[in-house]
Length: 286
Image (cartoon, rainbow, N blue to C red; front, side):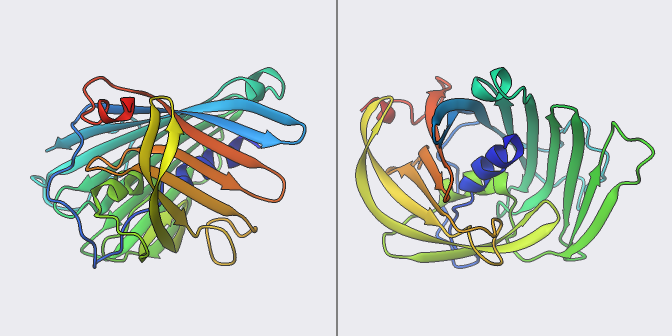
């Protein structure tokens, strides 16, 4: 249960514009140091409870960013400017108290400042007694994604390796969370773009709906409703289900709510805190 909750949450963020026919603004509408904190709740009869917290941080552009634990060399020029993204997921409430599931996951991604395409994706997952490290290096020159999965708590086990084709503009799930905020979202459009996640490549599609008034921690906010098609055959989740995401209808496109439904459970992800330096904080107060 714990692993699927965190995977669902990050997949909710994969709602970006089309590539290469995207309408992307030149500069991010959010400052380096922005921090967004989300509460994760699950509804599964007879349970409705908080199960975790997820944090997203935009660290900004850096000439030589450092990811702790990353051992893979980065392809490309030494003077390339990369944008550093980070996310963390921790269990709380029902998962830790009743099911004794302890989750502490760290996600870090570097994207190319020129086009926001992923350059490296790093995930360290500590889930109860399991400890895994997953790395994907996106090599532009070879047009390939080198995926590696290792288990530090099992040093005798060889790492799993896989080579995948890289497509132009390919993202991972973390960079997609920010890429969507750079788009000029227009109601009625069906958008599509490639993503690589955990050693598999996918083509995601998303429907953009009209803005609607959404109740949030800051009162009612005008938000654009997005519908990513990530359930079904050939998608990241093969089972039937539905998914939605709401972002503020302004230049910041702050994700304020995410929702996933299957036959047996509903997961709700709600924005509960922002860093004060975030430019969009004022608009969310209603």
